[in-house]
Image 1 (cartoon, rainbow, N blue to C red):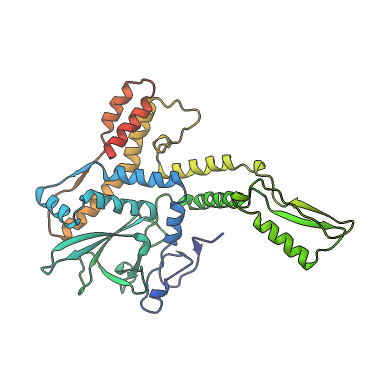
Image 2: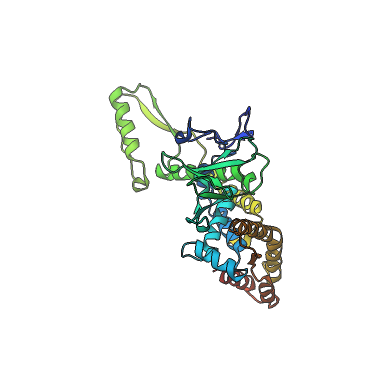
Length: 378
């Protein structure tokens, strides 16, 4: 399997744990950029390969942004103006999604001719690279790579020439001084295992649900023409459209016979269902999300309203509220850079209202709680 993270000793720049691809070709020989601790394009690919995983990312991001925010009138007018015609919370949600899947989130900050912050844009984290400062212990600049020419940025609050500034937020990891990693990083190989399982099954059905075979000719040897005919016949039999078709073969040799030997175990002997349940449960647990919130029923649990409400309250306290405080801190950074005072507080989900629904304790109450949660986040 392709290595996403591997140990490569570094004589100068942290982190010690580095991505296999150190720099994109557009950066080679131009400037020294810090290597990220993972190949974020590959991390994004894996993140999108598992429905439960991405549902957790989306749910946590939605809940962390909350249902509104509180600040003074000047700060509210500023935030809504610089978000370019969309609600500021929608922009913050995209920022939160990037932070959740990659451990890094970026906002491009553009100033007007008078030096005031005038525009704000979300920048995809997999496109960003960080240049250390002269001391080598904090970011000195950023570059976005989407084409051959890097687009440089200055750190927020340190304008430089005609460059826009970049607000970078990261989830701490001991593996890098400059980049973050997501909180769920421990299940990266679990995601890869799940993707390999799906690739195996897709390949199996693409080949008409026929396992790997050895074609054995007994009593003779294949000549080139027969071998080519057999190879062509087996190739043309691939694909779902050829399932259940009959392969008719004649052997142009006396006293010879052909047989097919399976090289892999029967599909029914491979425990894919148990593997899927195990990987999905591990992925959901890494996010700290109650399984019912992403549509997974846990065996042995009754699913009563009190149980669901209790899980939701724990989820809010241990997972969502710390992220809300982190996002509030990033908005405060932006307000300080704009010389605007005032507090900024996100409005959380009303868990009390959900708990009240649980007290009804009637049939289907857990579904009512989940629908109430969905309504608050919509």
